[in-house]
Length: 462
Image (cartoon, rainbow, N blue to C red; front, top):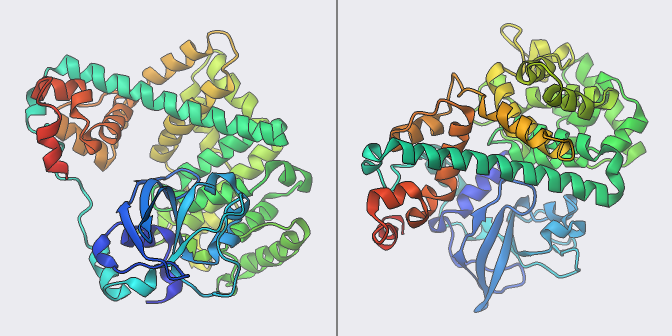
């Protein structure tokens, strides 16, 4: 299997299966034992947090970072990023530049590195076949099927509370990011930069969330504003920084123009670049290819550079009108290059023209990004929390619910009729069901009883 076809998401799945490797050692010969993988981090920062690793018998607790190649640590500038100061182990599939400086934290601490390909118990091809065909759908939550007969009002209150908790958590993360940017001397564009980053994260879906986060954080709106770019220049920056303008993608006049622009812009502004292998196309239909999402991100970037996004959002939520309708119109009207109305990849034409971002995804971005963003942006406005909260609670459930939400409805016997209830089901599963925290859940206490909701059911999980 070509090394170029492996991305960090696939490598993480290999790492999560202990049977895929054995006898781990660091590049300088120290024995490594994985005591606890930790929790997968889908936000910015290391790939796993709260991991426990033993190195030569000494136990460490902290974060684990996954890369395709050991050189990616320096290429991604993690050595200058305090978010990676707590990394206790760097796991790379390959070591194509063994003479390069080893991974180190912002505190100049050398970070132990494991080259995973050297310790695999089977060939990559065999592991790949196993992983792509495995069933990743959970079997059932611990209280199923008793949950079906639990009091509906108890379930509704718990799920609605979880929906509000999820909104509050997203609001806090957005506010913290904007504050961090302001503290770093970027107060002028802090909220626009934050909105751009979180919208890009949503454009990545689950399979390309990580590279979209990295890309959007590398795009400095203040620096871009000074460039005064048109749409084609924005395309060159976005696709260039995404690592998509390789020679093999120079297939026509449009891609040649982007490549020429990127070659000039990258040198002039010293812009970083991801690798094409960071992006996942596997098992995606062409309408969901990251190339189309990148084209939309470019159009969004150009709009933000030419307009006051904060004012648009503030007016939509605080002035009389229909904020959801106005935001949907805003996302539908983002202009992308004509090329991407006809193509889904460089040199590959669509069978027929279609919009890049559908109504379903737009609604999800409004729920998961724009409403929390509005709460953070308008926090000092009188009655803004109450007003925005009411707008959120009135949003109906999606007409096309995700497979996870449908599964949770079947497991709990609760049908979500509002967006808050959909969010609540997801939060309930992530924070209670998947962690066996039945004793802390109102539904679990009702189903199992106060005393029986904990230990007997942990056996099922572990």
